Image (cartoon, rainbow over all chains, first blue to last red; front, side, top):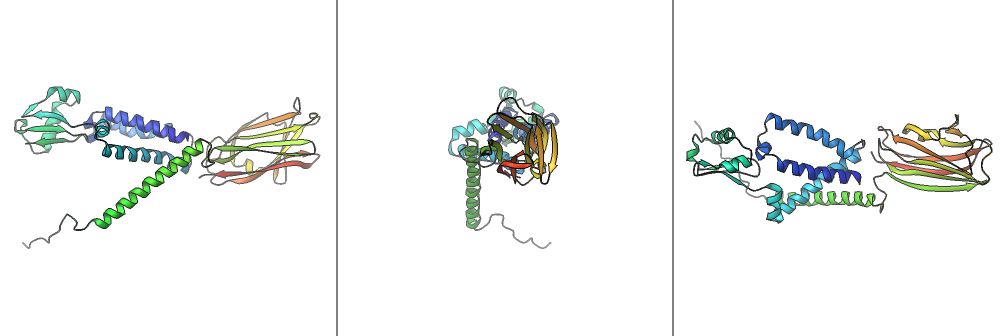
Length: 144
Length: 179
C-alpha cells in the first residue's frame, strides 16, 4: 500500500513539474534540461520502492503509474477543461508576421529558438508567417 | 525508369485491428484496476495479499504459554516482524531455551535480537537460543531482521520452548514470500 501511495504522490509531483517546464523542454531538450530527465528516473525510484527489491514491488509501482496515466487519459478525453489543465492550451507566438513578445516571455522562449523552428519548416522569413502556435506537445505549428 | 508499385498507406479494413485493440485496452485497464484494488484492500487489512502482514498464534502446555507473532506474507529485503513470547506462571528459575528451525533463520539478514541470547547451540534441525531468566513471568524476544534479497519462496517454521532437553510446547507458522 505504501508503494501505491508513494508512486501516486511521485506521479502527481512529476506531472506538476513537467507542466511547469517550458513546453519546448518537452519537445527539444537543451543539455541542461536533459540532465533533469536523466537523474529524475533514478531519484524517483528510491522514493517509490525504497528498500523493496522485489519484483512484486516493481510491478505494483509501475501499475500505479499506469493506472493514473489511464485515468488522466480518460479524463482529458472526456472533459475538455481537464485537458486544458493537464495538457495545456496552444499559445500564439506569431501573428501576421509579428512575434508576440509577451507570450514568448511567458514561455521563456528565446527568439533564436523560434527562428530555428521556422527554419526547420522551410520558412526563411517570419514576415511570411500568418500564425505560429506553440502546441501543448511543445512543437510549433506555422501557418502561412 | 519503370513505375513504382502502388503501396497504399491507408489500410482498407481496420475493423479487426480496432476490435483487438479495444479488447486489449479494456483488459489492461481491468487488470490495473484489479491489482490496485487488491493492494489497497491489503493496505486496509481487508485481505492478506502482498505483505508485510503478520498474525499471532499461541500454544500452552506443561505450564508454558508460547506466543509467536510472525509475518505471514513478506517480500525480499523488507523488514519482517518476528517475536517470541514465553510465559510461565510463577516465573523462571533457570535460563529459558527457545528452539527455532535453523532453515528459517537462514532466510533472514539478521540485525540483532532484543534481548540477545546468552548462549546458542544446534540440536538437529533446530537452533536453540538460551536467554537469562527474565524478571517476572514473561520473556519477550523481538527479532530485528530483513528477508534476504535472494529469497524467492517461503517456508514453515516451528518454534518451541525447550525444557530438560525436550520440546514442551511448540507453534508452527507459515511464511509466504512474493518474489
